[in-house]
Amino acid sequence: MSIKLLPLEISARIAAGEVIERPVSVVKELIENSLDANATKIKITLGNGGMDFIEISDDGIGIPSDEVKLVFDRFATSKIEHINDLDNISSLGFRGEAVFSIAAISRVELISKTKESDIGTKIVVQDGEFLSQSPVAANTGTIFKVIGLFHNFPARRKFLRSPLSESRRILSLIKKYSMIRPDVSFEYHQLNSKSFVTSGSGDIRDVMREIYGRDISNDMLKIDPLESDELYPRTYVEGIISNPTQNKSNRAHINLFVNGRLIQNKTLSYSFEQSYHGFIAEKKFPFGVLNISIPFDEVDVNVHPTKTEVLFHKENLIFSLIQKTIRNLLLNKMPVLDVTFNDKNIPIGSNEASSENIYSMNRNFSENPSFDLTDRIGSSGIDDSYTPKNVLPLLRVIGQISNTYIICEGPESLYVIDQHAAHERVIFENVIDRHEKNDPNIQTLLEPILVDLDDIQMEIVEKSEKIFDILGMDIKPFGDNTYIIRSIPHVLSTQNPIQAFKNMISVLEEGKHFETWEEKAAYSIACHGAIRAGKHLSLLEMETLIKQLENCRQPSNCPHGRPTLFSIDNANLAKRFRRT
Ligand code: ADP
Ligand code: MG
Picture 1: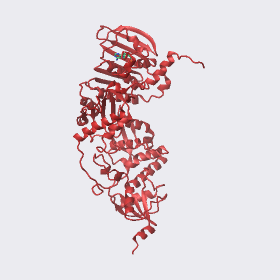
Picture 2 (picture 1 turned 90 degrees about the vertical axis):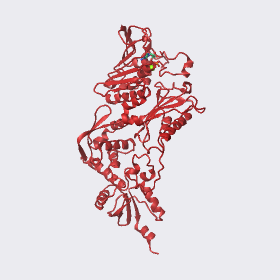
Picture 3 (picture 1 turned 180 degrees about the vertical axis):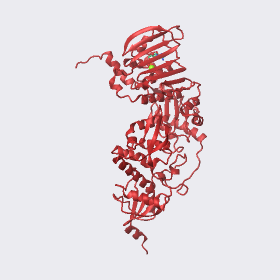
Picture 4 (picture 1 turned 30 degrees about the horizontal axis):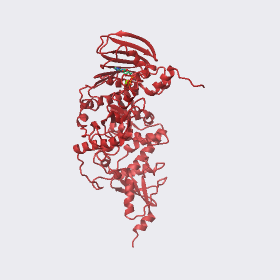
């Protein structure tokens, strides 16, 4: 093929493909345009998750009627003029390609009016083609209506999720913008969905109250920026963050901004998380909003068309400024208690040690009781041998130690069995067995229960449909961020169903690899369904458990790969304890 310039139709589609990935991208670009136009009120209305239409109206400065048509040209912008402006971008937009891209793949109806003008202008553009322009009565500000997004772009349409899932992304984005701009009132509506409205009072706590509720909002910590010093000239960290007793099970609620621009940056996100080190339990995450206020020429926002990736001239300095600011705040507000742990006051691997208690740091202990036991046997001089067997011989239960291990006598060895891991294994096998027989063991709840989930949890649930199917669980989406549960696996029936469901999600979130869906499903309930270490068991309970374990196909390892049992063979025992 010879070289030729692509026709506009194709180049527009290529540009659109970069900027507009899904409906939420349209919302992002248009909200940013409204903010750049100094809007104090932004209203977003969706039809069918944004797939049918997205309407965004603002009370910003509007577009003069003789410029309205220009907005649809590629690289048409009012925000920069000179090449040097690129080094000093204070507006959210500057590339002049968002409206152009959106109009290439939808029908756009735009109405706008400036304060100076008495009458507004309406313009309609479809698939990049200008259709009409006419005067209309309008308020000062701008209304964009984007209809039938991707209707001429089937390749992209195919990648869209359900309308519910698309509108969830959009709502989550609107919440982020409302956090960084508490001075702007945001309004979100969609038929049959809960609306979201912020007052625009300027108080970040008011916004947090809408998102997380009054109690959480009141207890969050507002960051007072540190005095700027030579090390970080004119650079500040501002925002509002969780206190150490508040936390989330994933990173979904960490919102980072640079000069009011929403960004994604793993390094800085990690810096934020790390600031809580020692304040919150492992695998728990802080949440909140951080805005890094930095001279415009110290950050390059012109990295990617979506503008969420930015380059800092001195990223490591910002990394340490975040830590310094947040640790300073946490230390002031939350003096760390001086707590020491030993195995006397916290039972090995007990619920307490792994609970959400912020001061429980007894990690090695709670996570790996088995290894700890080896240590102790080792240090007492016994030549212990960890001998996983594929088949367990018949065992006689002798008793329980530390409310954690079951001691059994076998034909050739003494067995020390981790009760939690053993029960986990039993549940695991049971689920797979039941599934093979097409007979899941479920408990129907007397009354269905509603569970609110965050965005990451929602995604996991969506991806794990098959798992819930295998387990016979009846869970269905019920509104934007809510699921309704009608039944749960029997082994979880003694637990609070909401917590049980959330625990399953967090186990699935670990993303542990299993060969089959059945194994994944079994794993998701085994750990939290199993009896905990620290629980006293009666002889009968122990015997029942051991009998079930003997029937397992591979009794030696729990799904976590933790050894279920140790055996010390009789010859060894005799050697150690022989009379001298
Ligand atoms: P950019 O934001 O990068 O300049 P866009 O394609 O998003 O490019 O928008 C093009 C131009 O249209 C903007 O520079 C601005 O002048 C005008 N514009 C778009 N949306 C609005 C709005 N809501 N209010 C006022 N002007 C707007
Ligand atoms: Mg823009």
